[in-house]
Length: 315
Image (cartoon, rainbow, N blue to C red):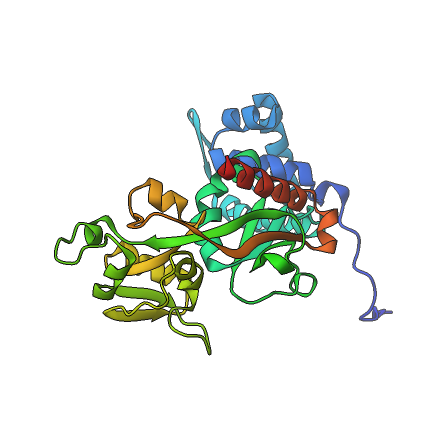
């Protein structure tokens, strides 16, 4: 009588001798990569005879040779090349799965928001000193004129440029202002810059503040010098202070220089101050640490570093 096996019947078990052992597959992969049992033995910290024996066991379980044994050399057979592609693909999948299965490493990041001018002229030139002592910390800078909600945006700390009367948190430094220009413009004999009244021959580089007069950012210095008004030859108005400074360096006019932001440019000789006397702008740069940053030791380190750097600059 012929018995029909149901389609859902389990297949017969694979004999133990035909099962694939992962340790043998690993040995095969190393030997195939090097095409040398000796080199594979060195990588696996085994003897050459142990590598040869494990490869032979794998070949016996497959029922086909994987290598051609030549004089002092080995080469993959067609079956060996097929197995190598499959093993490499499987190992790559296992490594990928292991990477995804491991718990994520804690983030080593500090996020800061500040004005574009503070970022460009003060923070970035000094940042290498922080990264040198914290090489694994990723610093993310959001340079904007907007007042950013630190908690909502996930930012650890802010440097706020605000009136001194409204300042809160550690003060990095207060601001002083005075006119600045390029050395080439100062040497222009046809348009001297000896006294404030000489500004009438020059272009003033100003910041475009909605609803404010063109020389609004000049007001603290004008009050210091008792100059009631400036009638420049022309004005160039910019959205960002960084753009106005770039125009001044290029010799396109005179900008109101903010110190200590531009101190490095003055030391480098890229900008000069044609007149004596600085005026306090009654504004300062204040440090604000987000509530959640208390759990981030790197944010605390960065805040401490900012305070230290600012103190060094005041000496």
